[in-house]
Amino acid sequence: MKKQTRAAIDEKKIIKARDILDNECHKPITLDYLSRRVGMTPKKLATGFKRKYYQSIQKYLIMARAITGMQLLLETELHIYEIAWETGYDVTRPFSQMFKKVTGRAPSKWRKAQLNNPPGTVPYIMLNR
Image (tube, rainbow, N blue to C red; front, side):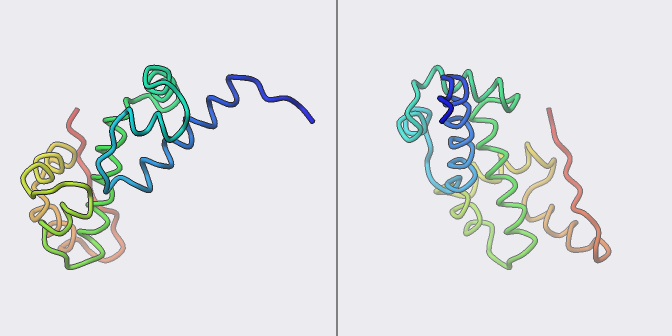
């Protein structure tokens, strides 16, 4: 049996952190919480995550929440406040601000624009950087 290197073990932990972010983006997630879950120091996790995924954990979490929000906007008839709650926000305003920053439109306007597109078209997302 081949012994794993420290780098390989750390990479698995970083991938596990990404999986946690994807699966639990509806929960409040802090760097300390995430680092405890994967068994790395916060600094090492943050540095390794950015090296592997080219963005901070916070930016990744924001995008995971935005993508979840987009899916819910397209696939359900949930109200915006319900979608905000499902994506980890207690109130609508921070969700709407995040969503507009990511897509360029407020959630309700984005949903309306996407639903007016011809069937089979891919949703348009404008990233503000």
